[in-house]
Image (cartoon, rainbow, N blue to C red):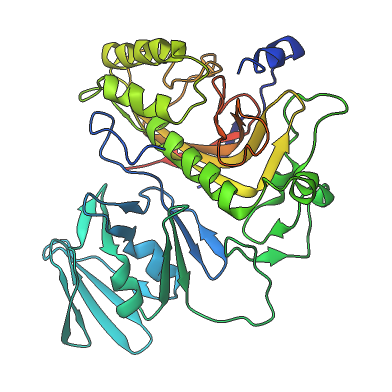
Length: 378
């Protein structure tokens, strides 16, 4: 379905940027939603962005992935038999039959048993990672530090990868390629070329400079930032009015820079509004570790992809806990919107601040961003 550009950027003026100067949870509260922290899936160096249902970690710490999209990326044919709740899969000489609700699958007529069941969620069939490795014949690794699944189906001795297993490209580069330590094969130039947030004229620094000059920008620290951003997005972008309570506020607040406890009051006011306005939201935030920017005012921005869908609300107003939420735009219900955004992170620690960055108090998905309507879901 073609995408409709609905909004490009929204800039904050210098006076508002000055306000920014005043500026790890284990999981998500059951009061928020059932969706856990967003899980990234990288196959052969390319990140997979699923069109709707996303990979997740269940209550038993098992990682489940939507089988159709993963299998099709592996050149397999995937069907669906609604009468028997089975998923037939063909890959090369392998004939696979998967049954929803069962921990067993048939592979060329032989039974294979897993440690958890295939499940149906949001009209998609999810299977454990072990299914991908043992049945579809791929090598699978799990990186708990960044909640990322790595699936390898082929070896490429010539290709170059970054520290996060992402394939690096050297052709068709963005205009500002020199701003970054490298360019990823699965990231469009549009994401790289998005203009930077409002910045100090001389003290701002691009990603290539930050990586070259600051020892804090090492994988160990950046993994912590990415984990916090994913958890922040998992709370912020998953809202359910019927079960909402102040536990959701505590979860969101835990991911943010806590200069004092005053912000928690405003988050709780949003919780009250969610219940009053009957708001239901689902989505995710997926940060890119090589795309970091310093604005010179004390903020480190991590460029991220985000997706969001609003399935319920009475009044199209303040649908997210976001000071810069675009109330002037009428979001459609049951439609996915996606875009790129710079999320501000900050710290009140000097010296070795690498492990301390958290989401800034006034961070916004709509401060410096693009957003597009993807299409209706059924």
